[in-house]
Amino acid sequence: MNARVSAYNHLPAALQDKLDICQLNEFSLLFEARQPTTMAQLIEWVQEYRFYFYPCLHRYGVIVFRGFRGVDVAAFNRLVQSGLGMTPWNAFNTRRMPGVIASALRRYSEHLLGAGDYRRYLSQSAVKLGPVESSIQGPHVEGGVASERSRYLTLFCEEPAPYLAETAMADFHLAYLKLTPELKHRYGQAWNQFYYLPARRLKWYDRILLRFSPFTIQQAAGQHTGQERLVLKPSPLVIRSPEMQQPCLQPWQFARNTHTQAYAAAREVYTDRGELQPDSTATGVNLHWSLADMEGNPLPWSDDEKQALFEQLYRDAYLMEWQKGDIAILDNIRIGHWRMNGEQGNRKLIQIQTNAFNADPLWMGHS
Ligand SMILES: [Fe+2]
Image (cartoon, rainbow, N blue to C red; front, side, top):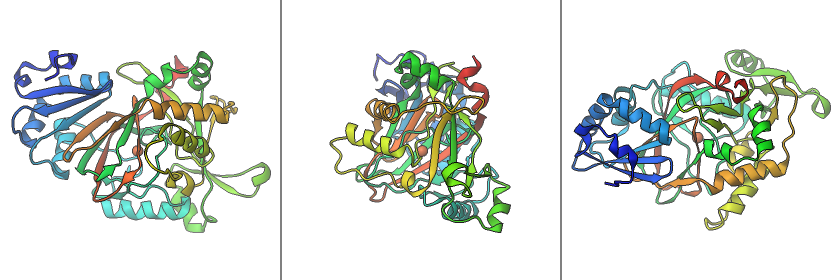
């Protein structure tokens, strides 16, 4: 037990001889069983002592459970839903389709938008994440391409990678605090604007299916006149977390037009991880990311500013080295993440996104 961890002082008395707590880094708390303990027991504890675990999650950003017996996808699901009382909500599967249909729709969107991250739905809520590559993803909050997204991100390591392939995590509140006053002001009033250029001409059935999607079809102007864009509603770049009222940056770096800077930042910061390739999602889909004010007027955002932001996030990241059976719960406003390069092997990382929220009312500019 790490006596310096203040969370231990607040641990319910009934759990003090059962759980060890240690801090993995500034924002991550690890809970380990002191003696052999089943997942069923952990789920009971978490359910009974939610009033303890939720403040830990909001105050730190990440909580990890490690070393419990009988952990599998079903037990992970029960911990999330029965233990923590969360409601699965997946930005891509809001209608809660069965896994096979959600996967088919995902494949359809990959044909339309370009090949993005290859992930497959195991059920309505559990998703097996895409394979490890020799590239480093861009920093993002899950679902950060839209304002409606999941409040929490839960991850289960069914099988770790043989080499590297950590999940990088970064404190997006700290990232905001480190900005210059001028950037705090500009990013604080900024809205992310995203659009896709489709990978092929839109067919009649695309137009029907897109009516049920968050996209609006718009004609491009200027040099791209005649080209159709799939435009998303703007979402705020900085929002306040509801519980802690901390301003947090909300990037979603999978865009092609900002990838040059993200890729340069990755090579600048991660110099000891072999040769890094460009991120296949950012280069596989034609997504465009820019900043605008509330009225839609473009805000300046130089290439140097983009690269400096990505470098800072990469530099301050914690690289989570997964152990088999680990379960991590992330505050998806405060903590950003991305996949590091490494070897795929038999790595299986399962994700459940939970508790939909709308970022718009939390926009920094409202205050
Ligand atoms: Fe992600």
